[in-house]
Length: 151
Image (cartoon, rainbow, N blue to C red):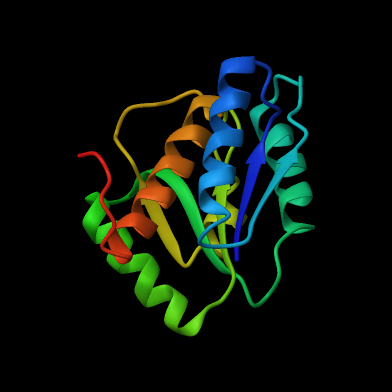
């Protein structure tokens, strides 16, 4: 099972449509759960990150393999990502991805991460990044199953 914890709600219809499309495609391969954590309108970064951390922790199980999405994380090719997820699945049936809010993730969340992953050194809007993550997860299943998918 794959769980994606994300801070913030999707507001744009085109992103919602893309997310729904990838959820449908992924249903052939795995159970997928997306949990949205309310983002805060406060401006104090420390308070915001602490509140988001508390809400994220409510949805994390001790058995979960935690992958945090962080700019400082490891960068992998799609093939390396597919191989990494395949090896993780051998010993962990639950993989939880965590996408932080506009201030990033609290250090306590980073500390419990089993894998810190970066898609780029660039910053992406977290709503758009959700689509990117889903596409890459879908791509890993296509790679792992030797199924044709566009390059």
